[in-house]
Image (cartoon, rainbow, N blue to C red; front, side, top):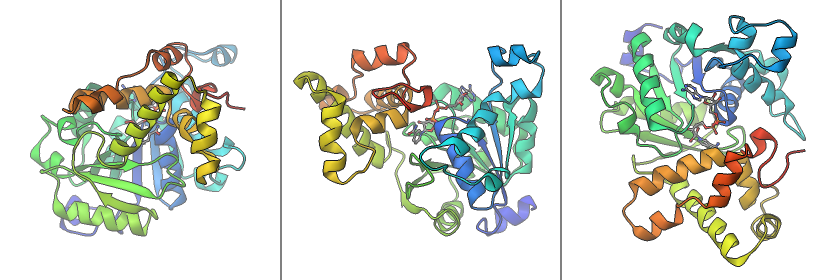
Length: 319
Ligand code: NAD
C-alpha cells in the first residue's frame, strides 16, 4: 500500500496489517481481537532485563529470541488460556507474530496501523512515539490505548505530519467483549482519518464508537473510574469487604461477574493507580481530586506484587 494511496483515501479496506506495542492485559487482547478480525498483527514488548529460572534451566541467555520475545509470547499464550472458555481460537492466534522493541522496531514500517498499549505513563509513551517516528512510514496510522493521558501531550515535539496521523483509540477491557471504543482526535488529527477509523472500527472490529474530547480520562473512564474510586473509599470508611461490595454491585445489578472489586482485579491495580494519579493531577475540582487519591491499602497491595488477575492475586485470588 503506497503512502499516497493511504493519504488519499480509504483506510477502511487498507488496514491489513497492524502492530500492537505492549503485550500486557490490553495489548495482547487487542492483538487477539484484530487477529480475530482477520488482520495480521505484530505484537511487541520490551526485552526482559533478566533470564528467568525456566530459561536458565534451558541454558538460554539474554541474546536468545525466546528470551527477548518472552513478554509478547506470554501475551499471546494468555489469549489461549483464558477460562472458562478461551477467548480465541488457536488458528486466529497464528495471525499474531511476536517480537520485541529492540530487534523489531523497524518492522513498524511494514504495517498500516500501530497501536501503543504500554504502561500508563506519559514519559514512557512520549519516548516511544519519538522512537516510532524514527521508523515511521508516512501515512501509517498511529494510536494510543491510554486510559486517560492527554493525547495531545503524548506527541508534543513530533512532526506535524506524524501528529496528523495520530489519535487515541481507547478499547475497553476485555476488548473481545466490550463493545465501546472511544476515538480521541486532537486538533492536529486529520478529520478524514477520524471518520475512516470510525467506519473501520464499526464495520471491521464490531465496535460502537464514541468520539471523545482530549480531557483527562475522556468520557467512560472519567465516570467509571470515579465510581470505582468512590466505592473504594466508601468501603474503607464503612468497613465493608470486597465480597460484600461485589454482592450488591455485581449479580444484584445484573452483572454476572465484573462487580466493583472484580473489575479492579481485571483492570490491574497498578494500572488503576496510574489512571487515578493522572486524573487527580489534571482535574481542578477539589472534590474530584479527593476521590482520586489512592488509598494506602491499594498502594500496599501493589507494592506486594498483588496486581490483580494478571499476577494471580488482587482483591480475589485468581484460580
Ligand atoms: P499492563 O501492565 O498489563 O501491560 C503493560 C505492558 O507495557 C507490559 O507488557 C510491559 O512489559 C510493557 N512496558 C512497560 N514498560 C515499557 C516500555 N518502556 N516500553 C514498552 N513497553 C513497556 O498494562 P495494560 O493494562 O495492558 O495497560 C496498557 C495501556 O492500556 C495503558 O495505557 C492503560 O491505561 C490502557 N488501558 C488499560 C485498561 C485495563 O483495564 N487494564 C483498559 C483500557 C486501557
